[in-house]
Image (cartoon, rainbow, N blue to C red; front, side, top):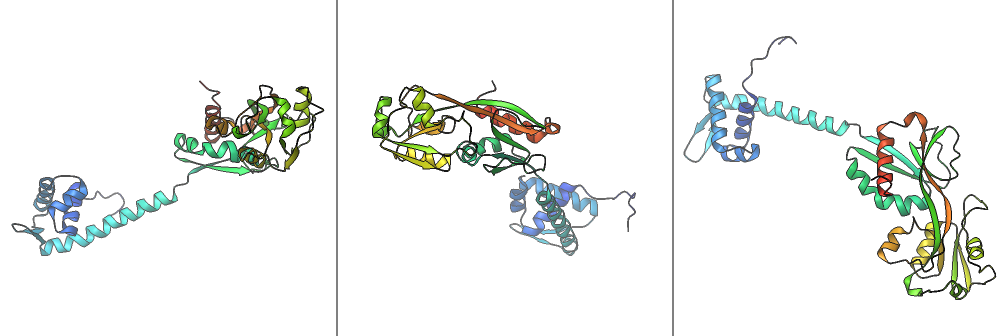
Length: 301
């Protein structure tokens, strides 16, 4: 047995590979196709190996080749060696640990804004996996529930670093089939509401918007209330009424024309923030999230 420091006396790898492929297929032409070289190159490499070993490895006929006894001795050793190398490489690829970054956001923000943009994250970060944590309860970043979160509020997040992203804006939105032209026409419509998970007087709501529009005394045809913002938006897409919704969350539908903003009057919502632990500021996962989100919001460049 060779010691670890002994120098192995082996023929060139390309010659061994050429012989093993030709012996396995019993064809110089097929071996050449497998290794993406010419049949002449295979013949040259095999001839070089035979000269180094001092034995013939193939019996060559006009249209066929076969292994000599020496070839039969060498082939299984090389086959098993190359198979072992291939198996080891496969195991290394399979065991390679991919970076994973977890981003938490509300159910509505995750479903309506993050999910449609996941492909852009993967294109920009092919070696990183994205895990989306959708919950209307704030994820405990200190406990490791997520690497970062999209938070919605005033930016007061003790012990965390918060980067401002975008001021939210709300407006009435509806299906173009409703053909609304004037705010007064809301009296003949169903107003679609959703329940805010945190009650704040500053939350954009239908009563506040109607008051600002000077329509605080009107009575709509009906009210439809959902516990989730996404369902309220889907009801508007289906033509079930008029929703007061985040223009950020309906931007795709407005661009496609499945929803319209019939009136000019808007109402400010809260600020979106990218929140994470301060010590993670310059880590690869946070940089990847920051670049992805800011690019999709068109905040960079």
